[in-house]
Length: 251
Image (tube, rainbow, N blue to C red; front, side, top):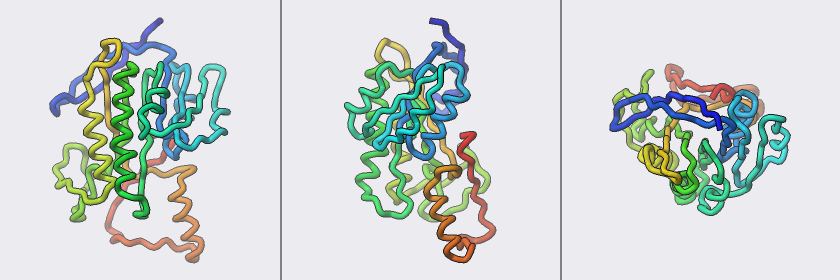
């Protein structure tokens, strides 16, 4: 089968270096949490824009049957029901997969979810994804982390126009950022591990800031509350605070 040459920027012992990777054509992608807010947009983008994909597997605990209609003559969209906390589900979904985009995550904005449940999904679920990559021979893992891995910290220190090299006192006391930080560490530590077939696993972790866009239930809730409050949105932070957001479509 023909191959394409890809150049990836990876980090080893904190230092960036370029790695040349031979990627086969007509790849199979798996998107965990593929029916969620971010996941469904990623699936749509993969189908519409990628020229090197034969199939996109959509793995989620709750399936959106309408996503089957995203299939085209060139790209097949397959829905797979399962949970990342069940290793067997992940192993089955990962069969014959070349690239996995791991977006499945339990986010708790209102503090209503038990901490142990958040840790189970976000940490143990990520462990299952990594192990499935190793055992099934999936060579590329992209993890969607969060800006909350960095901050704001529990002291509320400002993080002004920084990047991944900016010094910041990272300390968390909430289960969500703790779980995402641990999962990110697992993903980065797995980079370079040998997988089935003798090849090397390549991993990366992305830290998007708050994402907004179509099908975002939290933004819908804020909008509805604003309408009910006479078209007013109440802010709990000073007007001088900047908080960057990213639109979901280009993500």
